[in-house]
Length: 57
Image 1 (cartoon, rainbow, N blue to C red):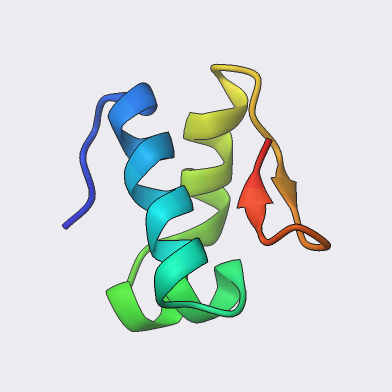
Image 2 (cartoon, rainbow, N blue to C red; image 1 turned 90 degrees about the vertical axis):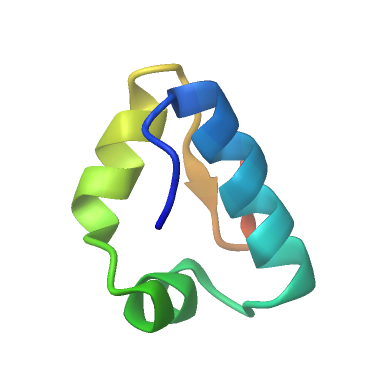
């Protein structure tokens, strides 16, 4: 389960993307998370997924 706080969420997701998952899609599939909802939560604090870097920036 991922944290609800957007800043904690950002840290956890970027760490998982760096260490465990090759793409955001793979992370969402494995953790059974809604990709759109995840991206919306992080967009609310001005972070967007960059597939080239495989992280939210």
